[in-house]
Amino acid sequence: MATIAHGTPEIAAEEVNYLNVEHGWKSWLFTTDHKRIAFLYLISITAMFFVGGTMAVLFRINLLEPEGIFSSETYNRLFSMHGIVMVFFFLVPSIPATLANFLIPIMIGAKDLAFPRINLLSWYLYVFGAIFTIYAVARGGVDTGWTFYAPYSSTYSNSYVLSAVMGVFVAGFSSILTGLNFIVTVHKMRAPGMTWSRLPLFVWSNYATGLLQVLGTPVLAISLTLIAFERVAHVGIFDPNIGGDPILFQHLFWFYSHPAVYIMILPGMGVISEIVACFSRKRVFGYNFVAFSSMAIAVLSFFVWGHHMFVTGEAMYTSVAFSFLSFMVAVPSAIKVFNWTATMYKGSVSFDTPMLYAFGFIGLFTIGGLTGLFLAALATDVATHGTYFIVAHFHYVMVGGMVMAFLGGLHYWWPKITGRLYPEAWAKFAALIIFIGFNLTFFPQFILGYLGMPRRIHAYPPEFQALNVLSTAGASILGIGYLIPMIYFAWSIRKGPKAPANPWGATGLEWEIQSPPTTYNFDETPIVTKEAYDYGPLEEVVG
Image (cartoon, rainbow, N blue to C red; front, side):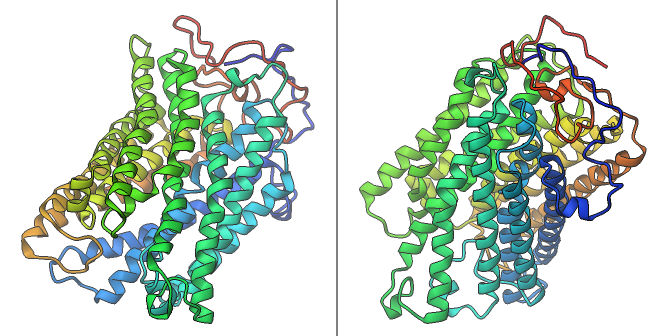
């Protein structure tokens, strides 16, 4: 996408890269290096992923039998804490806090983010939020669902709602600070020649995500604060028995939580743009449309929260308006999918591991997006709202989309992050296992939802057992697929072959410095002279 006019900088022999640990653990806990902070986030987020995943395994085991294995109360706590941990402590921060934290300064030619100390503070806030949430898990969990629906959460639940609410509240400030850092960095710290039209699409998507984080997350904070206040002070805010309005909470919560869907998915779309361009050896088709579609998604996402409330009694004409807007927000997402496909058309496509994950993302996200149209339509949403159709749709977008993109991005930039290569054969095998396991897990849930199986229940009629057994078997395969990359990534850090600066022959400033990067990324400020994704005809792989 760009070159450094002064050539690739020579790295002084005495300068250490960010992975050097000779100064001990204190140098990590008090670091202001964006790359180290990204690595700290990666470790923390991975730990929370396995906490949430463990709960998913337990309630999928419960669903092997129609009458269930656990009590209804235990089941409620398992799926509630699974959702809380996965949404707020994995899906929301996963790509922005890790890959974007690592890459944005390098991609725009900066030596760090605009506010390095605030970046470190955001990680500490994430950890403190996670501790509050783990405390809630250890004491028995929360049974309100991940949505904390009032007035049950604010008055009647006897679970550890306050601890979980405090954890999500604190983690929300981590998200706000991260988004603020990205916005200011992109505006103020771009290298000479790095115009808005030359920004990598990964930067565009995370810039749009930063706007969502800064504008949307405070609404979640207000909602959770009101829950805590009503729970402690018994003031009528959401509980109708003491003068409150439970629908108010849904408006507040979904005003944040639908944009939050795009906080989760927009960074993944940026990852896919980078991967598709690299492994097709072409500039992204319709670069300007893809870039501005990210901004369109960010704007439109604030106007569609009401489609979560079609069955709550909102006015019919209000529902019609929200239905129309929900169809509209699908347009910029469709632009991205069509333009990725056009980029691959007549390109020199190679099937390396990152590209396999990109194919998985495009296929699974497209299914998730198309089934979302059923939920934007009033008649079909009313029929499927409380069923497993919703569960399947959400996971096709979030897991089939965001997690596939996250893994694709990790595989794509892992040689740059660590300076080491991973075993390609094992990586391709894991990508295949994850794709198969995911579809075995969640596609049967579309059928279950169509047949009318309610979500959030611990027991079900026997005629649904076969599909639930298939879904649980798929979850077992999916879990194995997730474990394999963790094993070979850990192996590669110490024993993997050393990676060249640009193993993929990719464009971009991050590929023009050594792997792993030095502490301050560049010895001298780069000057950008070329357009984004400036691939020559059948450009050969460097390295």
